Image (cartoon, rainbow, N blue to C red; front, side, top):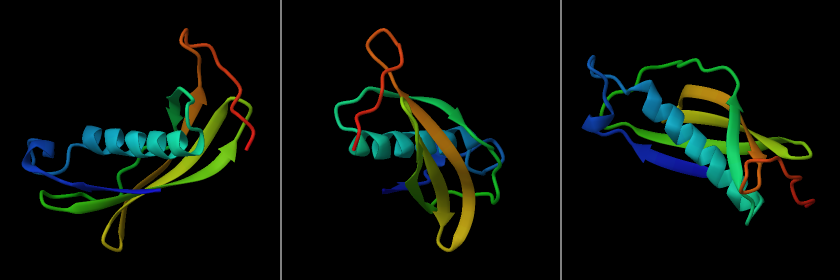
Length: 113
C-alpha cells in the first residue's frame, strides 16, 4: 500500500529540516494501515522497527511517498518493508513488525489467509 504526506512548516525542526519523529510516525502509521487491510478486524500494535537511519534530509513543501509491502508472516506477527521516497530519491527505509493482541494485550494468532 502507498500513502503520501506533505511536509508542512509544523513538521520542521529548529534547523529547518523534517523532524525525524514525524517521519517515524508516518512510517508506523502506513505499516499499521497495510496490516489492517491485510488482517481486517484484528487489533494490531507495533512491536519493533529494524534499523532507523535517515538517508536524505527533507525540507518544507516536499511530498513524500510511503510504501509498505508485506515481508514475513509469523503466528501472531507480520512484518512490512517500508520505504519513503521524495520523487526518485530514497529518504528512509526500515522493516516494521506488528503483532495481533487481544483487549488485555496478550498475543493472538493471525487469521490464516
